[in-house]
Structures are given as structure tokens and as C-alpha cells.
Length: 532
Image 1: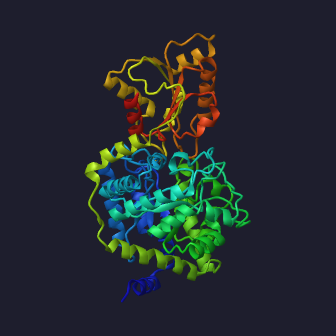
Image 2 (image 1 turned 90 degrees about the vertical axis):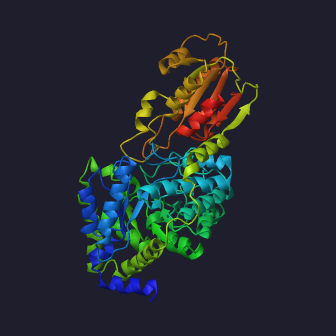
Image 3 (image 1 turned 180 degrees about the vertical axis):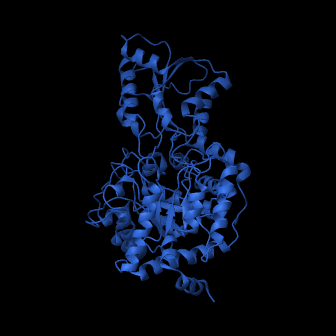
């Protein structure tokens, strides 16, 4: 009997509660494993969104994964759980124990698709080692709007065809490991002016425009065999005047399924981001998403709720609300069965196959990360031939307010999560190398910028940074103002080193020397310090 028939027969034996639970991917706060196991046992859920909050080191992570999968194996519907992580380069978990490379923008700038594939195989294999089987990556968004507050370093670049090549490579890399990849955020989050963690963005594009631009990387991912695609909480009024993509049958079924031919699983972005919570009741949003075509409803951002509201109660109310809708007939049980048929058939087929399908790259993970970081660095401007410094004296200062570093390793358990900022790594690498220079602390920089102008005998190397913090932002505007002040005072002495994207360069018309890492990752900071 084929898998489809077996799954259909299994579904016939399940209660509504068991069916509905399997369509949820949930998060839990801290190391509350008893609650997580209860979600598997009593709520029948299909997977978890996992962060450093849940397991802060590989030993703890492996134990968590084992315990949760064991609990799932005891159920009547014994399909393995999706254990999903935001391992995507610019964002990541277990960053002290893994190799994330420079992140997608850096990989895009290095522009070696073999290296991109290898880096994503590293992500997948390192997560597999602890039992996490699903990467919520790659980002298939195109940086059409350089001021986009939430994508930036998480995208491979600004050109659709270029992004598409690297998205396809990333999917291939994850496939080689046997893990699952997920292209996100459909139909594209790169042209927004706001962060959907905070508000509901709107993109006023026609379907023709989307097809030419934002959808090309998703098309490439689908053609490469990506198993999951994540929706975006963004309104496209020219395509669906009523609903954001996550809740839109026009977008999920009309475009993603029918026009692009995607046959894998559709998973929602987190349904408790403010873009959803401020506009829809929790159960209503889940019901609308399932009706629209989503297979899996994810509530991953429990950060928004566990400190201010009873998030466990909201999770229960959401699942209960969907169960009630099925029992009352407002959500047809046939819709739930159809979504579940796809989920279970996929899981049983995928997890029956052996995991590793190619030679491991784990031994070379360190070197691959370093190679990508070095290859990404670009001398964008060098009009006065000030770069490289080649042993010359210089003054070094960091444009960012150091208070902002507190958020890099944040309570969210995702985000950059580097234990050390780019600043820390640059300073320690210069010390290791014995490089002599003068350091201006932040208060010294601010004092120098406000004092009467005195000539500088040597170049002033100003380092700008940006970190893709979910739901909050780094002080990039204030940094730009400090650079502009420095340029007014010492126009021929300023060198900017960017531990970020180069999108800020439009603000510095008079700047003659600009070197960019396209990353704020520690590996990129070390590579840049070595060039200093």
C-alpha cells in the first residue's frame, strides 16, 4: 500500500483534536520541557520552533531533541516532530558552537554558489548533530528597499536573479545533509518600509511586478525542490485587497500552488508577531491561514507574550478555537484533512530516508566560514588610495553607541546572538596581531566631534555596524550622523569600515574610502581586523 493511502487511513482514525494539533508548530519559554512534552502528548502538536532559550548548549539541545521525539514516537500518529530553527547566517542559534559564516549578504557578495551551498550544508549538519531537523532558511527576499529594517543582511542581495542563484544553492546545500530547508518570506519581505514583527507592512506591487522581481528566488527554490515555504505577514493590495499573504488564498493557492507549482508544505511566519496580533484574534488568524492554504501554523515568537500575557493560555485558546471551528462546521474538516494529508505523507516519506546523502563538510566548517567572510570584503571606494593602511599609524573609533550591544545577545534566543560584538572581535584581533594604533572610546569620539576642529595627523578609521535584531533596531541613523560630522571636520582623513551592508554609503557623498564586510558576524570582524 502506498504512503498516501496509509496516511489517509491513519487520518480516519484520528480525533479532531489529534488532527488539528499536528498542524501547529509552537514555541515554549525557557527550559520548560515538561510543558513542551505536554504539548506533544496532550495537544498532539506537529513541531517546535526552538531557540537558545530552550537549550543553551549542544548537550542540552541534543537531550531536548531526543526527549521531544521520543514523546512523539509514543503517539498513535507517530510522525516525527519538525524541530525548526532560524539558522540562516545573519540569525542563528548556538552561535558559540557553530559556524555561521558572514550571513547571506556576505555570501551573496562573495558570489560563489558552491561556497553558499557548502555553508548551508554546514548549518544543516551542525543542527543535525543536536537533533534539529528543519532550517527556517534561506531568506529568499530581495533587498529592493535598502532602508528595509528587518531583512538587510539576511538577504543575498538586491538583484532578483542573483538572489535566486544563491537561494537555489542554499537549498541544495541543505538537501545534501538530508535536513529540511524553508524559503521565506513568501511572496517577499525585501521591499517593505517596516518590520512585520512590529506592524503590518504593505507592498503596492502588481502580480506582474512580483513575478519579475520578488518571486524569482522562490521560483528557483521550488525548482530546486525546497520542501517548505514560509509566508509573510504583508499586505499586497493589488493582489488581495482584504488579507495579508499568510491569510490569502489568492496568494497561497492561486500564486504559490497553481502558478508556481509548489507541492511542498506551506508554513506561516509566527502568528504572534504584532503584524498579526494587532489585527486578528489568535484563533481567527489560525483558521484563516488554514483556509487560505497553510499546512502548518507557527507560533514562534512567544517572546512577545510570555513576559506580558499568559502565552500558554493563548496557545491553548488558539488550538481550541480551531478545533471548535471544525466541530461547528465553520472550518470544514475536509480542509484540515487535506492539509494534514500533505504534512503526514511528507513527514513519513522524508524521515524514512537516511539523513546524510553526501560527504560531510563538518571538518572544514571553520575554513568555509572564514573563506566566505574574506571573500565578501569589498573596497567600495578608495579615491585617495588610503587603503590598505600597510603599517601606517591610525586612530580607531566605533560609531555605534556601546549601549546598543546589550541587545545583540538578547532574550529572544535568535537574532545575531554573537556573544561578542564586531567591536570586541576587532579589538581582540588587533591586540593578538600586535598592531599599534590609537583608540578613541565612544565618549572620546563624541568629545572630538563636538570640540573645535583640530587637524588629524593620521587617518581616522570609523567603524559602522548593524545587526538584524528582530523587532528592534540598532542605532544606524545616529552612526551615520557621527560619520557625517567626522567628514565635515576631517574630510580627507576619514576611512569608514562597515561591519554591515553598504546601503549607508548614499549618506556619505564626500567620503573617499569605504571598505565593507557585508556582515556583522564575528568571523567577518576577525577577517576585517586582519586586513587592518
